[in-house]
Image (tube, rainbow, N blue to C red; front, side, top):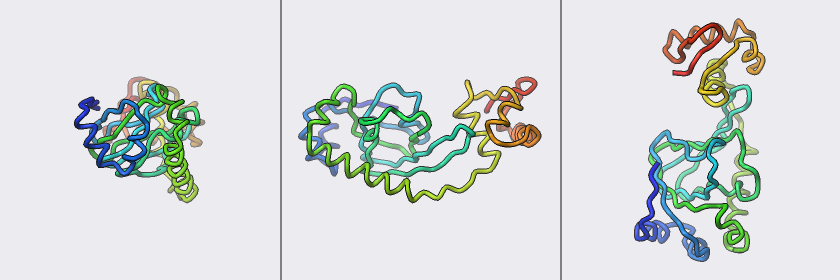
Length: 206
């Protein structure tokens, strides 16, 4: 991730943005953030609340359930807004946004400018349009069931401390499978080089 504070470069991106009229009316400090493919743009672990507008690149948005199941929620490309929900609701503990390719976003702090944002009618209309579109997409989701292997690996990546699974029985309970099924998946994943056994009932994602 790279943050760019060059005012000339920022002005160029804002001028090209679909939302330049709204952005010009806010009178706040903007900056650019560039992400490499695979980087997390937003996650439950990030404390800073940012409003971001995609200007180049694309993202994947997905939810990780407590059983490790990964559901694709949406994708986004140029003009997609991130942070619109964070203005009104506590940050979700299960939603992740990942750069699907190299990404450039116009960004600013939500916390620093929240009162100003909520008093700007143009910005509120922008938020309403964005949130309405997202609600429509989510209600149309038809998520394909994930395999047990996918669920185990997702569970290790997003729900285990240090991506390390400890305790076969307890984990099998969370994943709604038998301990025998879980052990078989872990053995296969170890053979494939996806996980490494650290000790009895303890495996780390590679």
